[in-house]
Image (cartoon, rainbow, N blue to C red; front, side):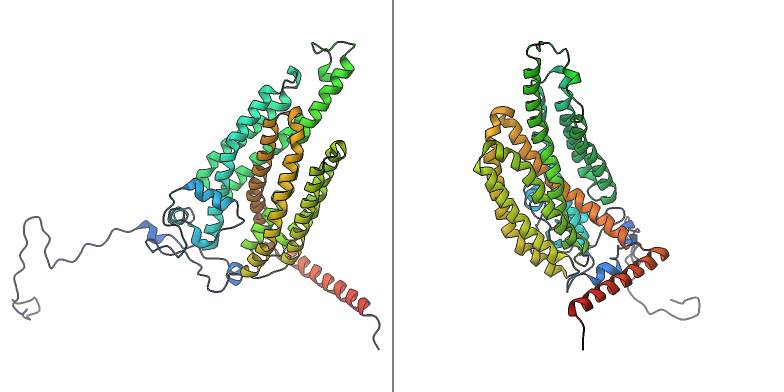
Length: 432
């Protein structure tokens, strides 16, 4: 066979094409473009690359690769998986399930940094546990509101906080689907949490004296005694409603500082947050418990205060050790060293406090005590999540230096160095 240029092609088997079949010598058709191949890979920041532990791989394994050792095979039980994670302060990147990793890689923009994937998977588990806990908590609050027996004019004191918890419950369940969109989810949760926290504080600012004037059943002769008894009941109810919210703000801030420190070990700010919050937590709870302790003389209150002081002392010392840049391994080791003693002390504190509050069950009801304890634990978990979001956002804000703020930061550094150097020279005394 002659070609167009005059050369001859050596004889060979004749290509035959069967009906409905492509020629065996035809070029294979090109594969259709895969949009996933054109997705840019999220690179870690230079700061993050400098603070990762040795051997850290900055990218997630490719799709279809076998999971690393220790990783769950499939996400079979979200309930069990979430509870095992939520009670901890962090999870490792190899604990992210394949399904969670696939969802994160398909997010917009894709999330491929392993430690960021682990943080978002941990947040998802914490939020799921909080949403579950809010279901019985909301039911108990609505039950307490219906059974409170307050005059009609004061029903809002119990119904407004109950409906605020219902709102938080609905928002948490709805936001579970947005767990891969950190910026969007944290904004909605923060605003809803502000409404949930402020609602009971606002309603208890309303004076009840003027609202109870002319209430049926309170005659002129019994008005003073009846008002005094009602005020005592309202004071106790306000205490068991507001105190857990206020205390959980500090407890959640401490946990958020520990979470953020292990996520960004090169930052000293989270450690200082723990140092400042731990003594405030102990003093605040001591102030709350000293009144019922002197009122009842129960030794359970004293035991709770001693156990709490020990736990916060241990935590404060750990926070001081964490208040400097360190490696990831050092941060995890220091937190783990202090956490065992801290957990034992907090368990003793919780047992003593529940035993002490048992004497109030006849006055405020057992369901109120149970809902108060559940509300405290739920608030601590929720504030751990929201607090870590706020600390991370403000750490990023603190690193965003402009030309003017960079000059001010350098000036502050020089002033601090001069001050510390002058103080060291004064401590050393005159030299020969």
